Image 1 (tube, one colour):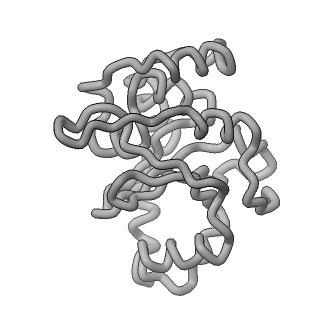
Image 2: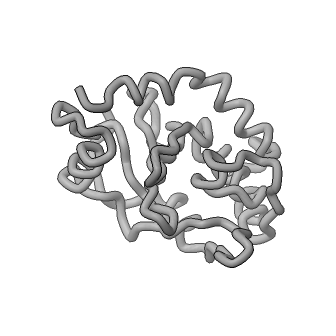
Length: 175
């Protein structure tokens, strides 16, 4: 298991420091508010209890790093024990029960952002109405050029890699 540290890895900190613009009136842009650090184990445990109602869960496999305007949480999911934190998938837990894996790893996450799709948009809307984001595309080209793909490709790839995530997670609720 990856050691729990509330400090962001440098590349995650860099992408979270970029400007996330969301226009509420026409629902365009990326609805995302980065945290200043990963939520603590205590905060993560409280969040997973609230989300699932399951007192047996501690949420140790999640690193919460940001949220949308309604409080839905984006997290790195430690699904591949022994691998680097940025090699892990990114997931989103919406405030109204929306749930899903949004990127296979950090490189794919960068390309999702480059296509103008944040965690909430990926789960709620998919890639249908995405509008490329120049600042995130520049960041992705600089830090993950070998992983270049469209937001639709990122989402299709992650559905193949984790087809039962939603059902598996819902099965943990209120037990």
